[in-house]
Length: 107
Image (cartoon, rainbow, N blue to C red; front, side, top):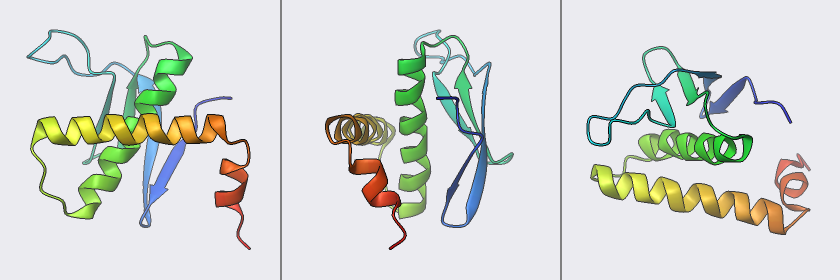
């Protein structure tokens, strides 16, 4: 499946694109993904495997969700929670074929 073009959460739409991300001062490596709030963009580092990119996209989506939640988390806790939630979402969808269809049903 191709990378989605947009993500909407709480009536706010972000464009999703592959590209070059900033380099972490801590590690010297590119971030795998970033949310650019000023430009309403989610940028995914373009040198990832498709499977890693799926996890990265889910991670970035949870950054958006948690930012809107009002929780006050330090950076380490925020990153860990995004990791846990993104891997959990993917695992639930992979282990339960009905998952996407059930939650996408409007009825």
